[in-house]
Length: 168
Image (tube, rainbow, N blue to C red):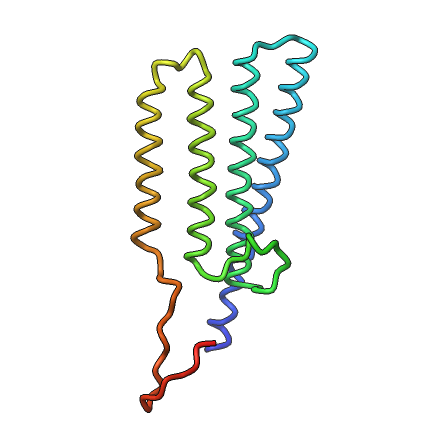
């Protein structure tokens, strides 16, 4: 029974791969959108605001792809293979690491979306409401992160007989 339960962790492989495929798709679409914005600007003389909104929308897709990539790698690393070759900044040791990485990328996406609304002349009236909403969301994420964080400094563990164990 223990072996069967241990093997169920491999169920996470499918959503991890799906998240990585989704990340690749969004990053490709965002990259193509940036190239198209450059083509529109250079050959057809697109306006600065139009170009800015197009590029920020593309960057938003790329950042969302980054979120999916972090989720895919994090799930795979947590459940399947902790020794996967990823950069040290992408290393996920527990769900708190994954949560903090995701919150950081989500805050970046919120900032990009807000700047896109700020420079879009057609949505100028929405700037204040979007700004307040974005600020509230970022504040909520910060509060959630602070309230659910685990203290990284662990006290010395006690052995069953009362002796202290070394913490190195």
